[in-house]
Amino acid sequence: MHTHLPFAKLDAIWVYLAASPLLGLTVTLVAYLIALNIYARAKHNPLANPVLIAVAIVVVALKITDTLYRTYFEGAQFVHFLLGPATVALALPLLGGLVAGSLTAIVSAVGIAKMFGASQQTLASLAPKSVTTPIAMAVAEKVGGVPSLTAVLVTSTGVFGAVRARWILDAVRVREPEVRGFAIGVASHGIGTARAFQVSEMMGAFSGLGMGLNGVFTAFVVPVLLPVLLRWM
Image (cartoon, rainbow, N blue to C red; front, side, top):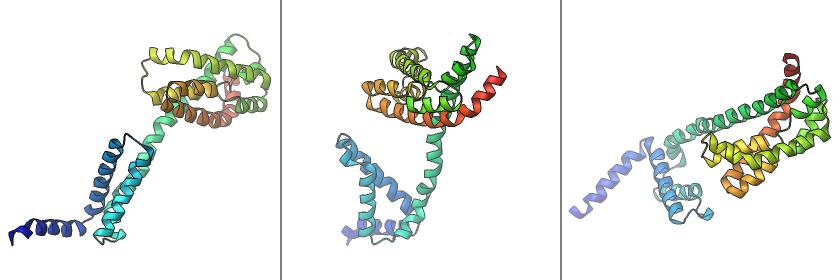
């Protein structure tokens, strides 16, 4: 008679959880923790993806306990709701770094060249120098620059970044591969990204992300910002 007591307690706990919105949240968190443990034991094999395993665990748990998805989602919706803020939290640092890096590259290049008496055509050729060549040449042509000159400047910028970026980032004590990669991609486009991939896959991935985002951002910003800079300077 007493041997069934633990099972009776477990059954009572399950009945309580099943009637509570905490059910979905609890099942989701436990499933993901189990999946992370499996992923770690598999030495981070991509076939042991923790999200996929967690989903499978949740499905099996709901099937075994005959729990409706609607009941489960009453608690899981808290996790679902947090996806939006989490995405924004991830995007804001990238956006801030992109805007700061891109604007610094444009303003510093145009400002320094203006100080040395460069012509307006040269300034227009310099403005998009930190993005990949096809985009830079198209932007330069649109704002009155010389595409061939821009191509040379883009290549020079990329080579300089590939050679000196590591020293500069070490000097300012930037250690994280994600940050280093993103900075290199924003400042040194494809040539810098190729170098970043030689260092690590993570750095290369973030460098590629920075390069792509900076290309889009610069294409929209330079035609608007350059006339303002020319009038102000």
